Image 1 (tube, helix red, strand yellow):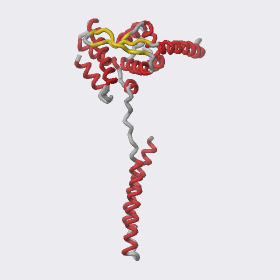
Image 2 (tube, chains in turn orange, blue):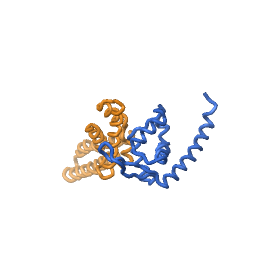
Image 3 (cartoon, one colour):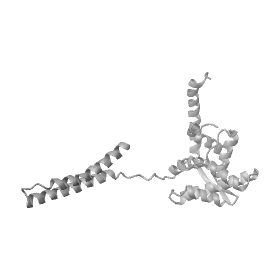
Image 4 (cartoon, one colour):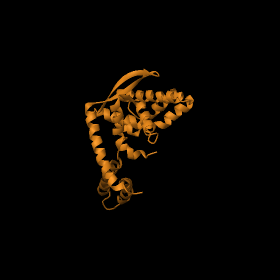
Length: 135
Length: 109
């Protein structure tokens, strides 16, 4: 009978433990045990009876919904990443332009680091739009 | 065996009917369904408990603990007055649905 309890524990592992779910769990275990005894009365070996009870139990998705387990919502971080990369690269670009104009106003070199840094928001934009397309 | 997704929408009716006859506990209900349908439809127990939860929340059925068997207390369900009214509605709805579907299914084969 330990096997039944273990199986149900396994099925319930994503479900938050509280009084309600604990009661449902007890009820299920009790009923499954009853089924096992019934099957054994019908002449089944205990091992077979337990396996049959477990197989016929089915999956627990509906029950999870009733017990209010929400699918862990995947936060869409792509947008935040993109925003951060835009602000970050913007600041760095302003910084380079300022240094360039302030110290060497007659040589334009800031364009090189600016091009390099632009890969950052560009790649984040790519990740973001790929996410959007796959939704 | 019947496809369970067709029956799915009528599980409430099936279960309520069985509880209306007398108070029953989980395994008894699943067994009764198998017996009455001659095993043509077997409810998955996991589904059964989901239905109990939903109906209990809506106060269509209520639970109480009954006699002890095999080391555990059986949890029995009884139908409430609200549940009886709900079942009545379901019966009416079903005869309506049956008529409609029959309009299209009868006379074929």
